[in-house]
Length: 171
Image (cartoon, rainbow, N blue to C red):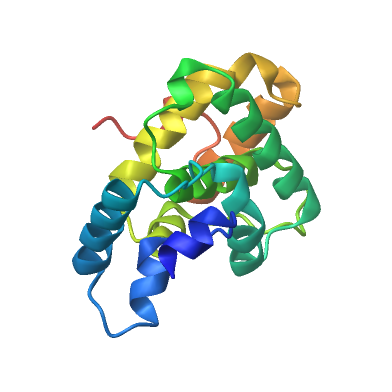
């Protein structure tokens, strides 16, 4: 089933398949690699963009978040920095990052924990992807530096109750 999904570019992860089958994740993964290698099955590489619609629906994100996350992924995947990263967590990280950028108050802003739970990964994976995403595509973001500063200020106020970084307690 997983091979068929991959061959027809349906964005289902091994975890998705394991959740609805009587077979463990590791067994499915092992058999996938064995069958693919033995029969040389044509399986297209999994791309993070394919996961965006499904993840965005599950997180109930708005159109602006979806559009920015697609832009972020397109930019990242056009660079060498985009290779070697797991597609589903990367797509979810793009939605997280876009949620921080979006200024529309009606759009949802998923947390790192929500993203990690949705992708069956840990928060550290999301954080590493987030840092790589920002450092790679910061110049191509469809927002101005003023909007980024406003977003940072909003995040500081929301998460830490501070108006500036200087107001934060030293660690």
